[in-house]
Image: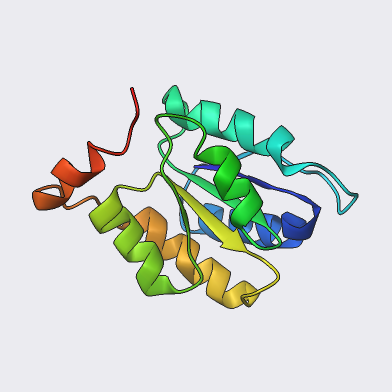
Length: 141
């Protein structure tokens, strides 16, 4: 699982990484390494590349609102980043949309809720079926 964010998501990133590792997941950290101001695209693009090329099956990205990092991630054709702030949204993003990156808004949800969203996201599977037809229409290429 790839994980990364910006300075606003730094503490959440570290806590979620530890939580997922405790659950037995292998997590690759794309940064940042401190709360010093940084630009989320510098983290998002390498994280997205790792999902696109199969190095990581899934990703989790955290910034203040979750919007900027999700927008950046979704510029990649093979990435489907879903901004979620509830566990049920994280589950549905995987089940119905085959999202492969979870974007979290650190300034708008509690750390505990962010951990639950991440855990749900990595635990769910894509249902396929009627959803597959729709997901296949997302890419421009």
